[in-house]
Image (cartoon, rainbow, N blue to C red):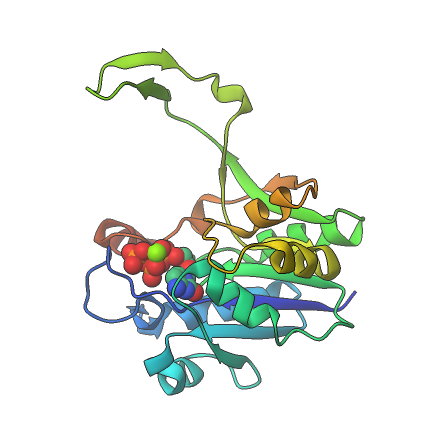
Length: 220
Ligand code: CTP
Ligand code: MG
């Protein structure tokens, strides 16, 4: 099975607020995108395509292992993944889409996703249970109900897909559509999405607290 990894790294990192694209922000001295590419390769992906902000093509190229291909991303994550998919060769069996913002994802998560694809799943996402009591509220913030947690999961990346249904789902998606992840894109096309166990270390770096936590984890 030939697997290509796509690393979405073309965002601006507004919520992290360090004044530069999040993928280039260092964790233990190394840009987040470098960590994300390495975990895909260590976990068993054969080649990697990275989406970079238009102005940061060179900086992203310098931050990832030689051999990783860098393409310019789009205005939304959906547009960025679409741009990367366009350079994935049709002979590819599997595509794993990962966030540069999840630098400490253990390679074992990548391996679990690849194993599910090898076993025949057309789409698979790593998930974790919801551990807090989860409620719904009305417009004024009053609690209206408690959600049945047993059926809820937190979804992480890398998300894995057989190449053909992923490409077909993106082709069927309106040009300006903006979905939060790739599993939503294939589900919109009717593809069933399986789950494997994720990992707390695959948490996304979104705000400053997350980066501080990641620095502590690396130092341990
Ligand atoms: N991403 C992308 N292209 C975009 C927007 C996001 O490739 N146009 C990538 C980001 O680089 C990130 C991942 O998608 O690795 C998840 O997005 P998010 O955590 O929202 O990152 P940013 O969009 O960079 O952050 P923010 O929303 O705070 O600006
Ligand atoms: Mg964003």
